[in-house]
Length: 288
Picture 1 (cartoon, helix red, strand yellow):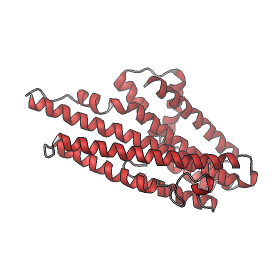
Picture 2: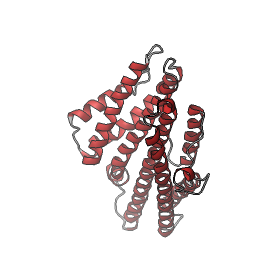
Picture 3: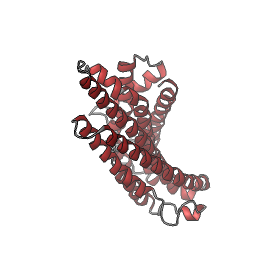
Picture 4: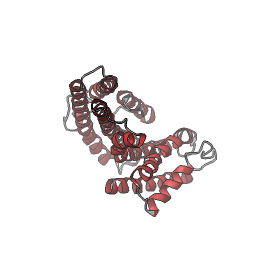
């Protein structure tokens, strides 16, 4: 998932759900009428967020080149903030519908594949929200950096050092970056479980998906931890350090699950990763 490509991410999640389960995603109108029939509002909201994110990014760049007044960048910031708020609201509303159906299907053995598909979709929506929040923090930091640079220039002060620039632009986003990495990790696990549910005796698709994505998932979870240690002088507690070490091992180019991996082994690997994500999530919320 890339910042500023949230509409595409949601489109992909919907297509994957249909391919996985052979069914359509839930119609909220039939699950309580929370949103107008056949429309979740998520697609339009994420399209707007994509556009406003791009506009905000361009405005910061123009401001940094002294080609745009600060007030215009503030307008772009506020507009993006509103689009994030709207997208988050639409997602939360739709997720209440997903949660309702997930609850109904949990103990229905014949519908377990749809249950897993819905869980994967819900986790993907969580990851989108986390990335929206990260993007807000990231771009605010970038804007703040350009403001500081302009202040130094206007007052004939020395240019900011690399460390000073990172302190303004990067340090504030460490927590959001860690939580976004965890959210994407949880979405990854949910999709893997759904693929095993679909074909427990032939894991070709599940293994292909795992092996194609595990390195990025591991990197997204561990990079914020490394940055936190370097930038904030934090010492990782033993359980977090252990989770980081294990995930870093999966970030190597040669790390793959073997083609003869059995479902029991595959699910054990997912359980291990889930524990790592839980540890990192708890630590980031408490310490950052």
